[in-house]
Length: 184
Image 1 (cartoon, rainbow, N blue to C red):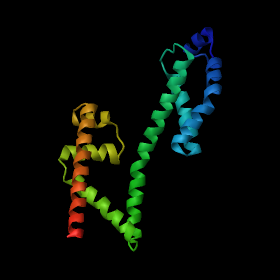
Image 2: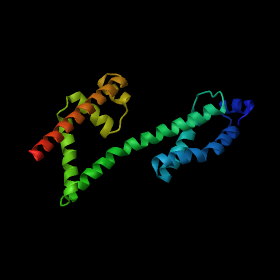
Image 3: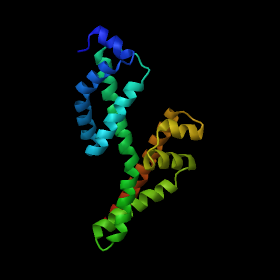
């Protein structure tokens, strides 16, 4: 634990005390990042970025627990943001792979499902299409999209939730239609 005089020095950006905090928390934060990202190099980069943000932070910490909380929350958020950036790429690669394996019926069915979902998205109102595209496919935050649309991040979240519910309902109707046809 940091003693009060060390905490005061830390808040004044004393490099010796910062090094002490860095040495104590680097490995646990690295392990947290690795557990989320499952990539050693990326986890190490994120961990270093987190400690840079801690050093550059103008926040005044009341105790070591506040520093620890800052590190863990920042690690979680940075890693989740990193995952969001790569989700569209994984989806695109998966979608492109379907075309290469068209002889496999299961792959064709998955491809058809994705096509059906994309068609449902195209039938949404333009604002909801944009919100789905930007938040899910491109991984942008609600606030960023809200800035584009001139609405709050909360309004974007609600619109996205509504759009997802519409997509689920359309898919359910499609599945029910297929079942009725297959049983009929």
